Image (cartoon, rainbow, N blue to C red; front, top):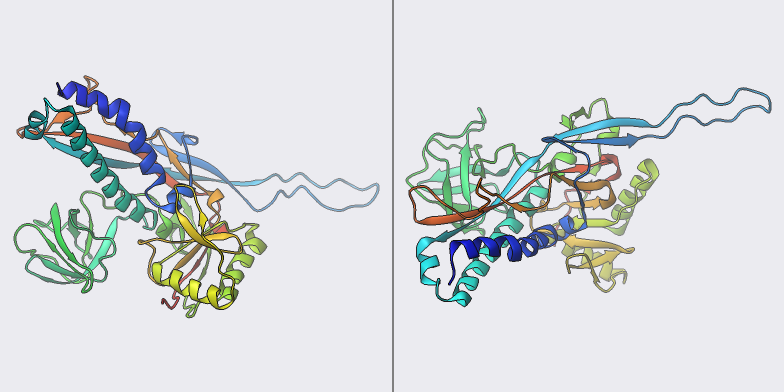
Length: 389
């Protein structure tokens, strides 16, 4: 007979390892290339020493002159707060009782919940990798009833629960938090949310995932900037924290790509090993490489992803990469620092399945405390304003 205890044990012993592997490698190809480590985690923070420049203790001299003065490596400490990443499943008491005498039916029920969790996590964690940590999904253009027109719905999907924030105060708009996305019209950049009329939301206000404002991973959107601070360091006085960025590229060419690669190797000694771009940019690259007969057979990456290559460097399209944009990365410089791998949130009794107070529903929550750090921002490049195909 299937019981809550047996279901609890199944989540711990059978599903945790499989789901963790899927979330670590199947979210998207970029995450699959990034190393994950528990090193440099101190309490609730990641503190990582980053070396920049060169050792200064070298020089030329006379046969009997003084030796060069010692001048060791240059270091700065990167500091970031571990972000709290959660994934929750729900199972009704009715569903459990209906399958308590049919182990196969209950296994199917758990499988369906796990697949839903992986799909949702793949969308949200993949999105975070390209975000700036704010959790901002889109900017509101106009509102009509419960239908919102936005600048883009790339980061919006049916079932997502969102909050609306006031652009001037960066505070939640009263009465329009915790709204569930019911439908998305991707052709017209509109989406509809649950509940009554969305009031108090105006143009330029923005949308975030429920409760996530300024609490998401430090993604590429935060790394690729020449303003403000990153990991606690001001980029105005730490120029080596600024990546190579070229905008208004227009028609993509092999020269544009190679120039960015050469600049990184010349100025930072960095060798690009991974290129990620939008789908339209990928098609434009394929057109260019096909015309020059440089297009090669796809290669297979970690996680089973297929990618075309440029001079042996895999090129992958990602749904969350901004339109007209290409990132040229040295993934050896990236690490997802974590307190631990994915774990079930357990109560004092050691149980992972808990009843929601006042409701005939049981929940279980996966948790991971982590943040992304790039130790050499100047070793990365971004091309934007690329004409898409």
